[in-house]
Amino acid sequence: MPKRPPIPGRHDKVGAVMSPRLKEMLRVDHAGEYGAVAIYKGQQAIFGRNAKTREIAAKLAEMEAEEQSHLDAFDDLLNKHEVRPTALAPLWNAAGFGLGMATALLGEKAAHACTEAVETVIERHYADQIDELDGQPEHAELRDRFIQFREDELHHRDIAIEEGAKDAPGYGILSRVIKAGCHAAIKISEKI
Image 1 (cartoon, rainbow, N blue to C red):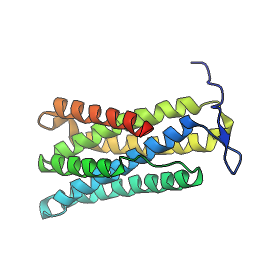
Image 2 (cartoon, helix red, strand yellow):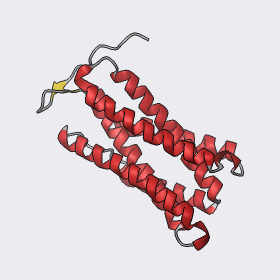
Image 3 (cartoon, helix red, strand yellow):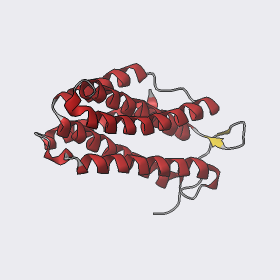
Image 4 (cartoon, helix red, strand yellow):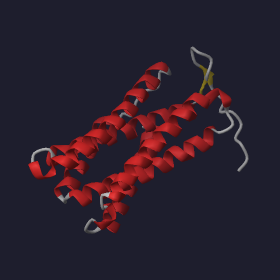
């Protein structure tokens, strides 16, 4: 695939180019991390109440902490580059928390199926952004951050698969519905 030319746009305070496309990237990634934190919180709200499921609640808390560190990084980037977050953040928070609770109520494997579906979409999304920024040295730092975050998402996906995500009742339908929701949220959050 040929390398893309640098993305044109205005220069920010430190000299890096901040184009409308880069603003979209930051906005949608912030929204995605915001939603991921909400999903893990929703799952923990269910699993944390029962001694039998406290082990999965602890694993989910670890993954939530990583997602929170991503969210914190995007908070900083949005502020630094004066990019507005998605106007739909309250909706994504409620939807994420609800999805987390609903999949947890379906059981541990369904919760893992949710993680596997979400992280599969998100890691692919990061991979596309990494490819888009490839060959643009002025965005090397952002690209490197996306690479690290993608690795974390792959790790979460792999944990979910190891824990039986694909053995969840109705896995195929559940996975397709969650992935479709993630793809829709990405497209909407880029613009709104």
